[in-house]
Length: 166
Image (cartoon, rainbow, N blue to C red; front, side, top):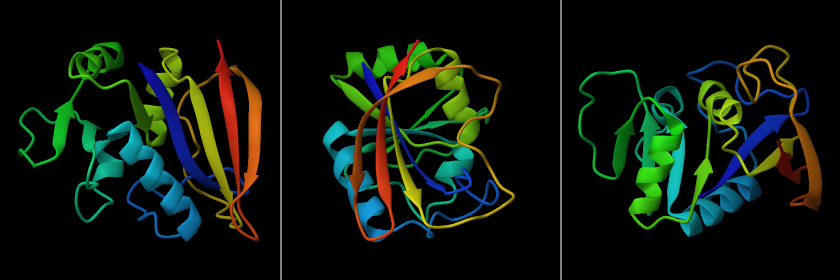
């Protein structure tokens, strides 16, 4: 299964000021790109801290949410998961999904990178600086990337698309 990590980040490399920071700071063009791409994939994978920053599950796609909770409350459109990310991807593939969008946060991004499960990384660089905040990944990595494209999506924001080289 193809996994594309899609994240917006500030110029100083932060994806949020804190784990409960609502992602309202990104451009409308970034939001449109994320919505279009994630609806095409049909699946968005994220951690529960990221999920709970949204007012509701993302519509028209399966929200796959990693959690440590024992019995999370059932929510329509949400598949609660835990543990091995390979097993989660295998189950999604058995459901007929061919690709998934990895939408954060830093812990889940790091988990997927550690297990070498990310095929591409799409980063929207937004004209913001947070100083303090969350990085793209939690963990210690040394992974090389191949830049596939750079796209200017508005006057101030660009999308960088990388292939991950393991």
